[in-house]
Amino acid sequence: QSVLTQPPSVSGAPGQRVTISCSGSSSNIGAGYDVHWYQQLPGTAPKLLIYGNSNRPSGVPDRFSASKSGTSASLAITGLQAEDEADFFCQSYDSRLSGSAFGGGTKVTVL
Amino acid sequence: QVQLVQSGAEVKKPGASVKVSCKASGYTFTTYNIHWLRQAPGQGFQWMGIIDPRGGDTRHAQKFQGRVTMTSDSSTNTVYMELSSLKSDDTAVYYCARPGVWGLITYFDHWGQGTLVTVSS
Image (tube, rainbow over all chains, first blue to last red; front, side, top):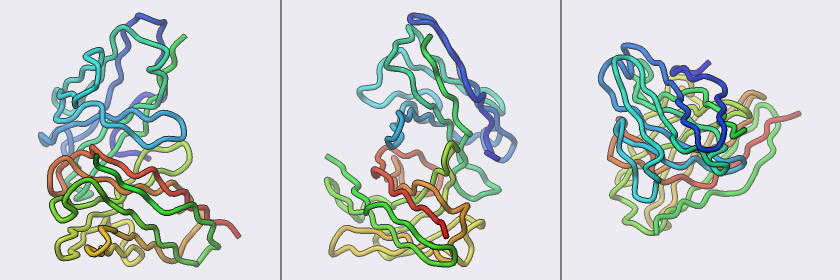
């Protein structure tokens, strides 16, 4: 059971916008710790997509955006493309764990 | 460019130990700590611990108390993670990761390729 809660799957047609939620608690997101997002293609290591709630590393398209409010965060993908099919994970620090906590992951399917 | 290269897949019997290596290159080894995480099949990630390669100080998740040992060798820019008393639910892909900022409250901008550890009798 993951500390952060994500929907198992979301889907959308090419060109559409999809959002992925990440729900936490007062020991992680709600405590003010930053949220980070990763994209994982099958059989590969995760790739950092968003850090510090809303910052994109160099090379990440601006189709990917994220925000945080209260005890939750969300990732949005606009202009959905076939290459976006992957698993997406949120991550934050958790004071009860004294370490990083992750969501269970959301599979994005492009219809 | 920053690279973390891990050792190959392992198959172990319950009760055995496994030691995974992670060789860093492309940056000054002692300027970033290294975290270890794992991902069970079809699951999210579980943070295991952190090692400071400057002096070998470590911290680990309570879940792995007494079972995990992390070490570093600055002569070869390599960190190691050993997990003992293996159980079937330790079957997972184990990753080393370099954080974006020093410390526990961070994100991970460079990852090893992962090492599959299978625990089976």
